[in-house]
Image 1 (cartoon, rainbow, N blue to C red):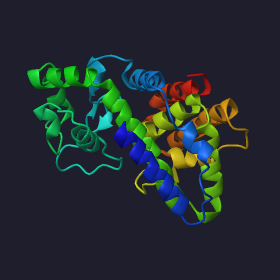
Image 2 (cartoon, rainbow, N blue to C red):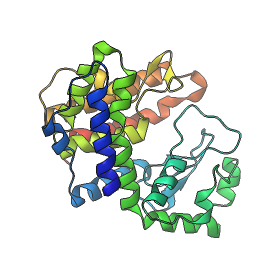
Image 3 (cartoon, helix red, strand yellow):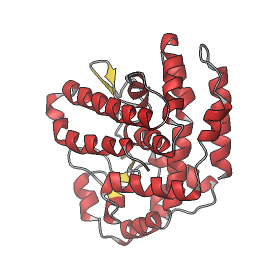
Image 4 (tube, rainbow, N blue to C red):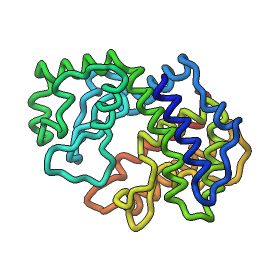
Length: 271
C-alpha cells in the first residue's frame, strides 16, 4: 500500500511538471483511491479476463506467441535471445514483489524465461517448478493487483510526455473523466495491463497504436462518470478493431477480436 500511494504521488508530480499539460485536480487524485474490496474485485476481474479465473491459466503460453504469460495479468516473460515488440512485465513484477517483501519461488527469479519454446513449456507444465509457481501466484493475487494498479497510475505522465502538445489537455481530461468512478478506474487499470500505454514505437501497425494513449485520444466528448467509462469501452473497441485491420496477415489477429471486444464491454458495466 505504501508503494502504491508513493507511485501515484510521483505520477501526480510528474504530470504537474509535464510541458503543456494542465495541473491535475485534487479531486482527480482523491478519486484514484480504491477500497480493499474494490481492489479485490478488480484483481479477480483481471484474472477472469486473462484466463477465466483458472489456476492453470496462471502459467500460459498462447499459440502463435513467442513467450509465456504469467500471473493474473499474464505478465510477459521473454526467453533469452528474443527481443519482442511488447513491454516485458514479468521481471518488473518480480522486482516489485521483492520490494514488497514477498519471496517468489526460485524459478520466477531468472532474468529470462527458463522455457525457450512453447513445446518445452507445455512438456514441463506439470513439473514441480511450474506447479509451485502457479500455487504461489494463486496465493498472491492482491500483490499482483497492487503491481497492476501501480503500473496504471504511473502511465499518465508517460503518455502526456509522449503525446503531441496539442493533445495533452484532451488526454488528461479524458483520463480524469474516466477515473472518477471505481468502474472507470478498473477500465484504466485493466486496459494498460492488457494493451499497454501505447507509447512504444514497436507497438504500432502502419504507424497506428492501440494502447491507453490512443483509446483516451479516440474518445468522443462525454461527461465524467459512467458515461465516460462507456465511451472509453467504445473507443477501446474501435482501437482494437483498427489494430486487427492494420495487423500483418500472417498474425491472424482477427481470431482474438471477439474476445478483446467482450473484455472491453466489461468496462461499460458497473464494477
